[in-house]
Each structure stands twice: as C-alpha cells, then as structure tokens.
Amino acid sequence: MSNKRFSLALHGGAGSAPGHDYSQEIAHMRGLVEAARDRLAAGDSALDVATATVVALEASGLYIAGKGASPNAAGAYELDACLMDGASGRAGSIATLQGFESPILAARAVMEKTPHVMLAGEGAMAFARSQGLKEIEDPASWFTQAGAFESNHPPDHPTGTVGCVVRDAEGRLAAATSTAGVFGKMPGRIGDSPLIGAGAWADDTVAVSCTGQGEFFIRTAVAVQIAHRMRFGGESLESAAAAAITGVAALGGDGGLIAIDRDGRVAMPFASDGVKRAALLPDGTIFSAAF
Image (cartoon, rainbow, N blue to C red):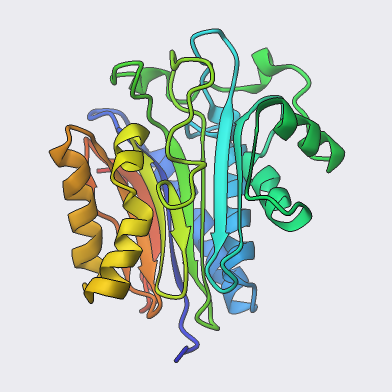
C-alpha cells in the first residue's frame, strides 16, 4: 500500500579522489535533490523525476557522463544510458551513442517510441537524430572531461557514472543511469550502465542505479540481484544492497550503488574510495557527500 511520502537518491559516480575538493559537486547534487523534491511534491512521477535529474547531471559537466565525458582510446566520446519504470516494467537503453548531449533522453525515447529496449552504435545515432534530440556541434570544445584527474583505474575497467532512483508520492519506483567511462577505454566497450539488471533496475519492490567497474557489476547482475534478494529471499533493502556490493568486491571490483524500496527507504553502500551521492530521506532530511 502506498503512502504520500516520497524520497530519492542520486549519485555522481564512484572513484572519488581523496584530497580533491568536491564542494561544487556536493552543492550541485543537493540543489538537484531540492529541485526533485519540489517536483515530487507537485505530483510528478518517479520516472519523470529520475529522467530530469539525470539530464541535469549529464548537462552539468561535473561528472563523467554527458558533458563531463572523457574520450575512449581512439579519441571518440561513446555514451551509454538506461532507465526503467517500476510501475509498468518498461525500460529503455542506449549504448555507444556519439554526437548527442543527453543519452538518458535517447534511452527514454527508445522506451517510448520503439518496440525495443536497447539501441546501439550507428542505429542509436540515427534514431536519436530522428527524434530531434540535441546534437553536439563541436565535441572538442563541448566536453569538459570532468574525470581526467580520477583516471586511476586500469583502462580495461573505466569508471564514472551518474544515476537517480525515486519513490514518488503514489509509491511508484524508477531508476535511471548514464555514463561515458574514463580516458582510455577500448572503442565499443559497453559496461553495466546501459544494461537493465546490471546498471539499473526498477520494479514494484526496489529501484537501483549502480556505479563503478562495470564488468564486475555485469558479472554479478547487481541491480536485479538486489531486487531478487528482496522479493524472493525476503531480505531488507540494506541487507540486499550490502550483499550485492560485497559480491563485487569479492571478485576484485569496486564501486557503489543507490537504491530505494517501496517504502521510500534509501541505501547507498559502496566499496571504493568514495561515491559522490545525495538523497532525500523519507523524513525530509537531505544528505550529500563524496566519501
């Protein structure tokens, strides 16, 4: 049974660098939480709020997604995203998208305008153009390469993601995730972020968005694992989320996640140097941190 409380969480990626001043990112995330809170109070849906929040994260240039993306080993900017609407089970995904400002808007268009869940590469680009999504005129000057100083992972495990999970006033859940990875990833590399069940998941039990070394999140199906632990194993949100991250660490990976359950409870576990994250808790408290 739903109640009229709402809550949400967002992240700006794992792999925070100790000693770096994240005050700008923390203030930005807090502002996005406040804006999302106001939208939820006005009756907006979880899906719309999750989408709008990730669009803003992409557009800021502060995180390794959207405008803040870094190039791959060939100098190209390949962006990935996915989202899922827990109320309907619908999902959309985009992978290795080049030339467009907002991968999450492309993923939403896939969900709403096609019979498919995922489009990639040239097909994704043609579709995004057909939908009138905003193109990047000059990548060299548009991208900020926000995570250049955070490139401390091996190039076969690039990190850097943004995401949002929401529980709205009607009890609906939604999740959205967007990424580009750090410098030097192999052309065509696809991590967990555009993969439903690995990088994001939402149903009527929980919504999850992940960040970190995507290969390990794929191998352990982190996002849907949490949902199954809760639905079939009877675990709490906190227990399921912690166990999923422990599994990533056990394989030698690092990262974190944000998750929210049907009652609005929030979990943000991580096994990494830090995760840039913020949340609106069910009691109205706003939390934001990088470590």
